[in-house]
Image (cartoon, rainbow, N blue to C red; front, side):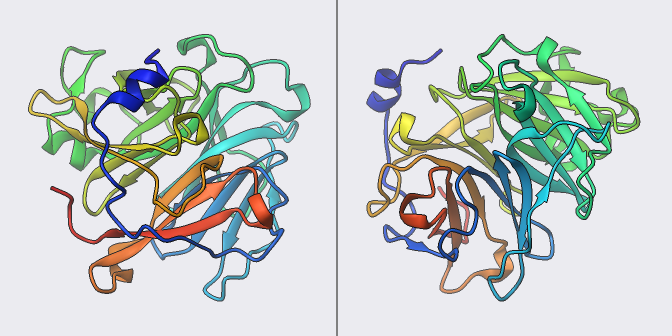
Length: 305
């Protein structure tokens, strides 16, 4: 594991967008534990809570629908859901344990239809990941389309050649990245969408001592990895290098007006929301400080150099 002292000593840039922040959620909406954010293709903002594991979404009037309390595919339990991404209208979340058996690790990716509390599939990655304490497991998830990966010749460590989607029948149209809180490391997986099998494609070390959320900007093709108060709110921007591996190109401090909060969620609004070369970037505070969980700042609409 990379030490916090090493991370803090590395090259650090100011937050590249607005240094100001504002709260955008009505007070006491989530009652704590909001741990992940993402935008659907239609611009709807979705959030995931870890305790109890619940799914939220916001309409255009900033009203939040009643939470959907989530279950495993057998209709039982309540997953400790920490991260969220949306692929072709389906919700994919990562969970580190069952809240009804919180002394045991259960590092899973789960798939849901947006209007149902019962998972349609679970991929239990626990046997394939390093051992972690139950509350220090999977925290982050995002999805990378095959078109992006093949264009950049992403290196498949399981095959020792550039990634070829044809090697993984029934995996869908991309790979999933998950982040393990205990070591700040990312793991890329091809998840078979017809059963609960999977193949690990790559391990990505990014220099963060811990990881709290991932967000792949599908429009600008940048991968963001964010940490919470463990790392003083710092984040990393990653891109695929000529050898086909993700590397950190930028490290950012949190916005100047952002307190050192337990920010466990992060999402960037679509480009069609841009105004004056700025679009909203959101952080989700698991601690719901001052009664508010979601704080907004901004990022440029053009790719950072």
